[in-house]
Amino acid sequence: MALFLRDLKLSVRAGGGALIGILFFLTVVAVVPFGVGPDLNLLSRIGPAIVWIGALLAALLGLDRLFQAERDDGSLDLLLMQETPLVITVIVKCLAHWTATSLPLVIASPLLGLFMNMNETAIGATMLTLLAGSPAITFIGAVGAAVAVALPRGGLLVSILVLPLTIPVLIFGVSATYAAVQEPAPFLPPFLILIALTLFFAVIGPASAALALRNTSD
Amino acid sequence: MHLAVEKLAARRGDDLIFVDISFYLTGGEALVLTGRNGSGKSTLLRVVAGFLRSEKGSVTFTDSGGRTDQRLSEVSHYLGHRNAMKNELTVAENLDFWRSFLDDGSQAPTASIEDAAEAVGLGGITHLPFGYLSAGQQRRFAFAKLLVANRPIWILDEPTAALDTNAGRLFSALIGEHQRKGGIVLAATHQSLGLSNVQELRMKGFAGAETEIWGA
Image (tube, rainbow over all chains, first blue to last red; front, top):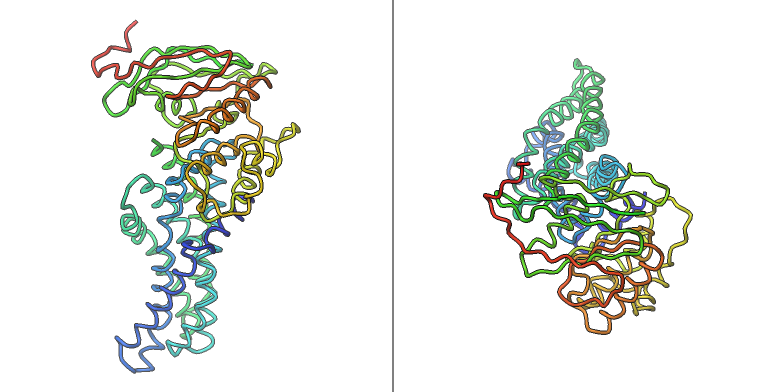
């Protein structure tokens, strides 16, 4: 609990990167209409996918610092020493990271939906699927962050390691959103699979991250 | 309460850093590790604290009630080269976090944050962000971290680096106080800490890659 509050405080203080994530998200999504051109129908068709990809990239942005910042100042040693199971420590750190960086993305997504000329149903569905799917991204990312913790330029490596693993989340997130908008396809099955993915990664993500942290300590 | 280390050996990469290190400490005793740079002082402390796997040998801690099932890392404070404090947070927030995170659930009283700051000679500035302080002040507050949570064993890796002589004496007094309460101290250092009830272990360093340690 104390760890959760501390991580939240850290991410809103200077250099925490919570704001950077949102700005990056806004920028990426805002740039797309310029590239695609002023075709409103096209925009509203690809809108949910663009918002999802933007959120995915923005969520990955700060993930590499999840454990590296702790390692740099020696806190990681003390976190590793404690009797609190390391898995719990990792889960708490993931939740704090999600609250600080991914939750603002979810909240900002309706605004970007307007940029993309999406209707209300599509905006609501995007927000809902992002809310359900973004924790999975954080949990997967924690594994990458733990593996790359000792590397000096680990940030890029984390993204490369993590992006392929997040593809299922992206697929079901976007397909659930489309299902909500386009008539024949049912919304519930892809959405439930998305939730299942999040729960699945909530279990194996922290466990493997803890394992990686134990073994990379030097 | 005692700590027994038997025939410890550790390896980094292909090279054995040390072999056959044994010592036995009871409550109130201190072990000071000396030796030139690179002789394996930090490695030994990290093996004892459980960050590195030992190649051979054992570390057993028996607490005052005779229990031996606790891992040493759970009853130890570790003060490494880095201070384990966040620059963005104030000193009080840092100490408060470690206080609740390191809390072992026992009823024994711990120093309050302001008392701990007084003890390291820096009362009244705990509202400042940690990053604003000088290296010596940061080191002192890192040491104050040991006072806000109770741990019987202190593992200190060059605790007096970046400190003036005054602070060095202050640390020695605090370590002495911990020993009087029955704590065990393991410290790697270059300066003499002026402790009493001390065993000294001189690290020779680099046991060599060829030394056969698996033999009888």
